Length: 558
Ligand code: FES
Ligand SMILES: [Fe+2]
Image (cartoon, rainbow, N blue to C red; front, side):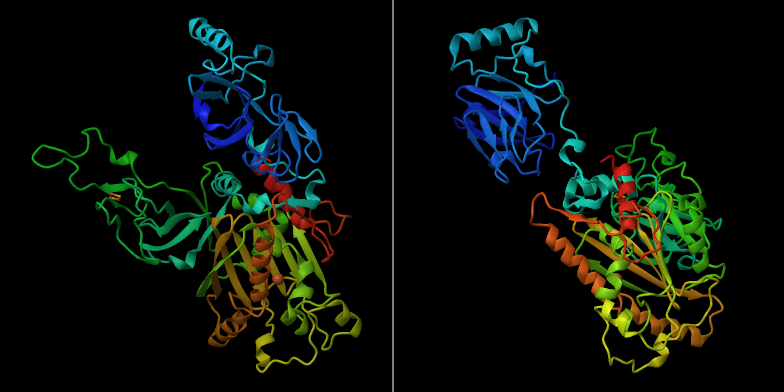
């Protein structure tokens, strides 16, 4: 038993409820006459705090939807609550209230959660017996373990056609994503090789929110290390990119070689025989944290997992084929960057690119200038795991759009023309039937091939409600000046104010705004019921989003 003092008896009003935090879990304490009871502090229905509720006749009523639970047993008493509350063992010593959230005794053992100085004889006797022989005089109303995440975060019974808002808005869920996804069994995009061509070249990047440095070492290898000094955790690399012989932390000047090994510790032996590091301090044990690295066709990925499968196996054959259609063997050449913050959850960006349904309704430019027209050849591909996807379509060759198609496409605007007609030129250069592919590579990469404008977009989450988008626009070695101009010109489609990117950024904010203030909210992903989850040949589909959440739930254990 691990008793923890959680409150004073006098803090809990008669027939009242008090919320306390025990090891990060909200717990509700109740006082019924002179007895104290404890339950999980969160309603099993919609995550409201029970400490804001009302106590009456031995029941607690949830403040949000007025579900009721029996305080002594945790039993759910009326709709909309159906699942019982956890209850915990309670004991009182003087004015101190203790609970045990680890190993509650069986309910048969009940009854000594009575304040000794209030129900004198019984209580005192109980307390004495307790200290004597470890006998049970403790309230225990529950034999089940501590409420786990799976109890707290319950997926809607409808399954993958509904997504609860907590997936996007909850800090605990976000922290678990860092651990289970970004630091879990994934290959995370960190850079293009052409950004660190020479020995000593480095560029700062991220794996999930975690800052890393991508650096080319003397042997030509690319290393990815956490941007966190082994001494006091300082983010030692301050420049976005550059060239160095070694890294020196600004704080106490610990230095590291280009592979992240600790090279020097100032005053390691102290001064005049005093101070300094212990004699057995071993530099080899205190290098920077190094990630596993792989590259494919000039693109660099890193993983926290040592025994990751190959990148090819990670993508699966269909998505790999699309990856290699864009990175077709020519050496990528850096053209420039966009970088901006989006006020939404990071997964919404994946969803946006697994949701072709929105495109003809939201994007005026896209449909008016023929990039995506109802009836164009298209595909929404998901890999076997559901985590990666590719949205693909072939540009219309037709010069005009039929009036039927126009009716379908709400975003179509007659009469808009381009002042620069070259803007929409498509120079065939890829061995692919698609003029546009948007590949979502789990968990942090979008590969954009929109005619001749090419980019990799890196998602850097900064919390449940925000992420940074880093766009690295590229062409290929061998592009002539005219092709570079063309790619740059067409690049206006993309970025924070791009002709195509702008509306998506706004829509993501609207969704996040809509989710933040309705407790217990959930929303629909029902389109295309013929495909439960996975690849669909219809653009009017959310099957890829469902596939992604199938994978997400498995990774998160939720
Ligand atoms: S924190 Fe880096 S040297 Fe002290
Ligand atoms: Fe879009």
